[in-house]
Length: 126
Image 1 (spheres, rainbow, N blue to C red):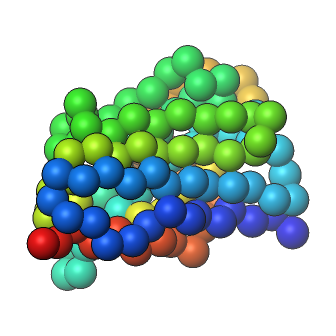
Image 2: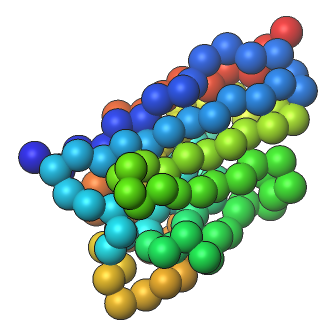
């Protein structure tokens, strides 16, 4: 069974950091582009960041650029999202998703993502 599982969410004060993990089971991630999305209550889902299948290509949404870093360890079948200088507006449920891209080393949050995790809650509040 193909599955993505996010972890690492929690409650953090403004200015703090969290590292989210997205672990895959049932398939290997090295032929997939991976993206992180988030959804705040009452708001539409937003693409946060993505990483190409080999890790050399990354992209970030404007609101997180310079604060978040996406990376992947294909040997561990895991993708990470390091979030620094967190702000209250970063609060939401964070999801990782996988798009098959065996022929493409780039990524885009606007692609169709076939597999999704269940999400992990991130709350930034004092």
